[in-house]
Length: 180
Image 1 (cartoon, rainbow, N blue to C red):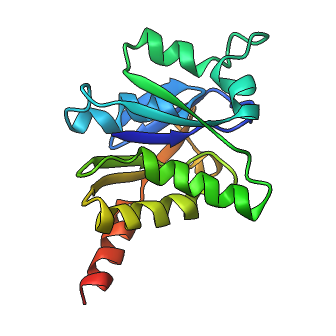
Image 2: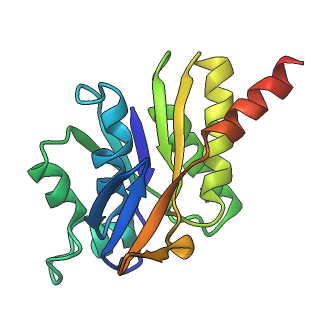
C-alpha cells in the first residue's frame, strides 16, 4: 500500500530525482509512483490519497487549472487509487480524527510506503505515530517513508533537480530502539 497526502499549494513543475531516476512533474505523488515504486511489485496495490477539502478543490481536480488535476494524472497512468477525504486539522479533536483516519485505512499485515511531503505540519508526526502503532497492533511492515525535498533542490547541468529523500532508516532506528 502506498499512502500520501495532498496539499493545497500551487506546485511548480520540477525534476524529482530518486536513485538516478528523474521525473518531471508538479506532483511528488506522480514522481514517487514513477521512481520509488518501481523497486517492488506495487501495481496490485492501492495508492491511498488523503485529501482535505481545500486540497481536493486545489489539486485533486481543479476545474479552473489543467495543471492541478492529480486525479486525472493517476487515472491516465492506470494507477489503482482511492481518495480518502479527511478533515482540516484546526482543532485537537480534528487532529485525533485525522490520526484515526490514517490508522483505520491501514490493513493488517500491510507492507506500507508513506510519502510525507504534503499536509498540515502536524501530519507527518501523526503518520509516524499511526505507523508505529500499526506495526504493533496490525503487524504491518514499513517498506519506505519518502519526502520530496523541494527546498533542497540544486542546479545540475542547467537543470534544477529536487531530491526525494528516503527517510526509512529513521524508522529502522526506532525499531532498533524499541527492541532493546
